[in-house]
Image 1 (cartoon, rainbow, N blue to C red):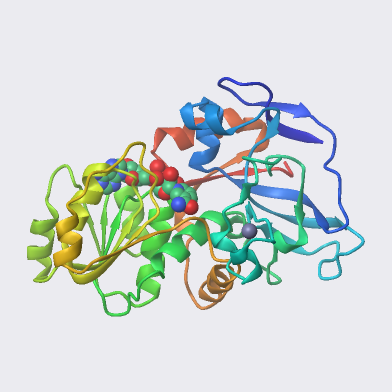
Image 2 (image 1 turned 120 degrees about the vertical axis):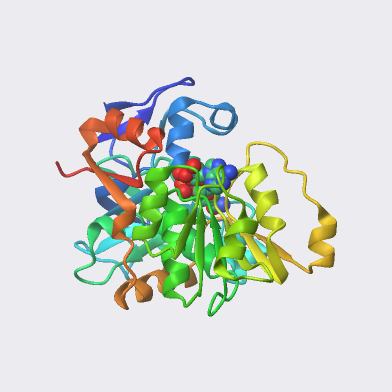
Length: 342
Ligand code: NAD
Ligand code: ZN
């Protein structure tokens, strides 16, 4: 099969013919149709310090996908060739305390698709059946291709109750954009999105943000005053990984507020812990998605009117992967897809 491969340590990715993945007795073999490009793929492509520490080439990259089941192992009864599916990219151990208790998102032995095992930027991908999610008939395949990051957005946005609350989304990358839409769908009053990039602020408005702010031009204090807010944001969704932005958000929260932190900072972030204490804040780290409560919520929200399609701004053939990566890296985009059937 054709696959986008990191062949050796160092920058770059290239298309190669590699052996088809082997299908174990508990596995599902999937013909990949569309894939989404994620920041993780960019880190692996550019071979930054995280990638150099984490990745063992050769590796097929990519983890956001939709495809069709083509073969199943002899233990697999719940999937049939022809099913349209996506994959939960965190392959958990199944044996630890949390896995055994059904809290697989808390597994400490998670292996990432396209990170610790061969991924989905390929004609075929194999996953254990417990990592495969069946879509409903007629699902929009562009949307199905990005269930993984959409799940990050949903898991983060639903970490604290947002009904009637004032929500601040920090960072309007693809995940922040989708989180803004989810917060609005889930009944937030104000959904303020803070983002320095004007292209992304515009996208945030299309996704349902009630207000956008350029943090280089205006303070959150001013925004609060303009909206008539007196006690601060009830819920903050930190999706930038930016130190100053996180600290700024922390200082603009209502007493008793909650901050769900998805953004991955490059360095340590000093914070004023007395703000957390006196304002009785809850900070919650978010990694991945809940298996499979988040996937259930994604599906029902999409089927009851939530629209995340404006977050998808670019579509490429897998052959144009270099252009796809360059566009994602530029920041002048929402989510980019690659089509593997072209
Ligand atoms: P992204 O890099 O496309 O988006 C981050 C956005 O933050 C950018 O649009 C950037 O302009 C904006 N930003 C930068 N400085 C800012 C500031 N001072 N104030 C407000 N916004 C600012 O990333 P993404 O794909 O949308 O992912 C969001 C974050 O979540 C990233 O940090 C990513 O590494 C992380 N992530 C975490 C998980 C997880 O499971 N925890 C999964 C996927 C991604
Ligand atoms: Zn486990």
